[in-house]
Every structure is written in structure tokens, then in C-alpha cells.
Image 1: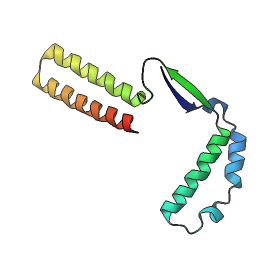
Image 2 (image 1 turned 90 degrees about the horizontal axis):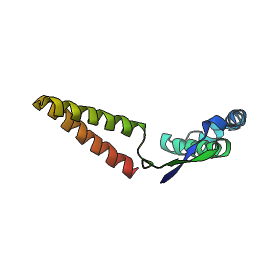
Image 3 (image 1 turned 180 degrees about the horizontal axis):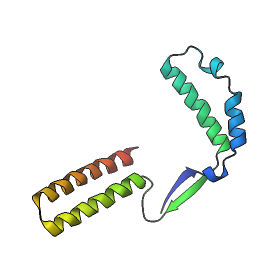
Image 4 (image 1 turned 60 degrees about the vertical axis):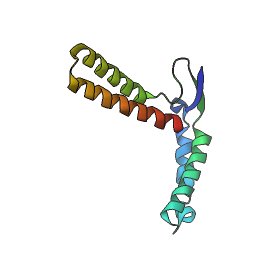
Length: 115
């Protein structure tokens, strides 16, 4: 069983979040900072407000690990379709398409597991 936290956007306190975002003195906070420094400050403020106004829920998935998201699912489905097409036709071109998709799927999985 894989558990992960996810934001519950159905229960966001939008009014409070909007007021808090409007009350931030962005000119004073960011001022004349370099873009990298300004970006880091912006992310810190935004993250703290998100944590304050957007509740989280624990999502349980018995079948897939947390990194197995919609993008991964779609790529797996595409790979499976291409494999079946190759098995039916035994065409070299179909095998090349399947092989390339399989390679991209492995790269995607590795990237997702690392992040």
C-alpha cells in the first residue's frame, strides 16, 4: 500500500488565500533583488500560504506507487498498445515504434522515481 499526501482543492479557503496574497507587500519583499533571489522569496511565501489555506489528504493506492501518475499511466497504455500491434503484425516498423516507446517509458519511470 502506497500513501501520499495531496492537496484537497475541494476544500480550499479561497477567500483567505486571496486576502493573504493581496496583503503581501511584494515590492518590499522582492524589491530590486536578483531574479533567482526574488523567485526563492516568492516560492517561500507562496508555499507557506498554500500550507495555511489548502488542506491536505492522504491518498492511498493499493495498486500503484506514488510516482505512477497519469502521465506514467498513459505512456504505459501507449506502450502496451504498440506492443500488441507489433505482435499482431510482426512488422519491423511496428517493432521500432514499440521499442522507442518502451525506451521512453523506462526513462520516464526512472525520472519519476528519482523526483
